[in-house]
Amino acid sequence: KNQVEQSPQSLIILEGKNCTLQCNYTVSPFSNLRWYKQDTGRGPVSLTIMTFSENTKSNGRYTATLDADTKQSSLHITASQLSDSASYICVVTLTTDSWGKLQFGAGTQVVVTP
Amino acid sequence: SAVISQKPSRDICQRGTSLTIQCQVDSQVTMMFWYRQQPGQSLTLIATANQGSEATYESGFVIDKFPISRPNLTFSTLTVSNMSPEDSSIYLCSAGQGNQPQHFGDGTRLSIL
Image 1 (cartoon, rainbow over the protein chains, first blue to last red):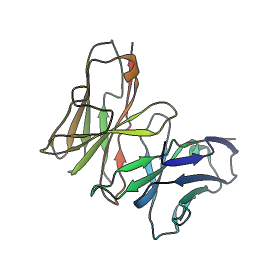
Image 2: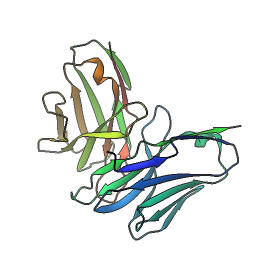
Image 3: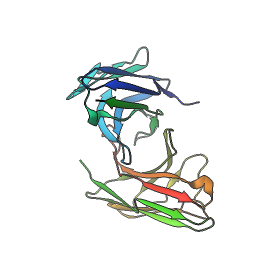
Image 4: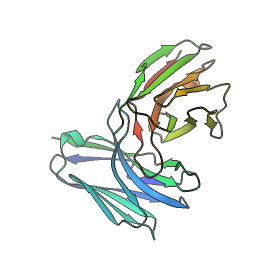
């Protein structure tokens, strides 16, 4: 069973609108949580990275939140643009190894329409 | 941030053959990783490659099927051996460790006929 669950699996939003993606994890012990954007045909690109002590992190129109108590994170996209169409992947880092093994969610596929 | 180049970007191969994927990083990195990503699914770690030591494989992946080389701090290869249609997937290389973002290549899209 995947220890990182994302919802929704996919969504379609109108250009200019906001949306929020959810990530629930059961990974423990937890080191940090990352959000990646993966455009079609490209590798994932890091958007944000938060340690367990951080509640929020922004990167332009992307804002990630983290509640380490409930093991939930969200990624909010403000004023969506067509270029935001991509898969957004939630990734949790385990602390059991010094190099930090990553546990990936299946991603939320976002389609922004004109 | 590190820039990672992978090649080939895609290939179509015959059953039973082998393909070697190359991954080049524009800076020296300690840790390099190889992942597999099947359509609509999570990335799955195949193995971790450190320079100067044998790769560490995850459960379900073995060296005979996925031999890895790591000759220096900027380069690694993954070979997919004796390919079958089940090996059709995207193979991704990445570099980074600890609390630093991992940087990914754009992947190799492999189809086996």
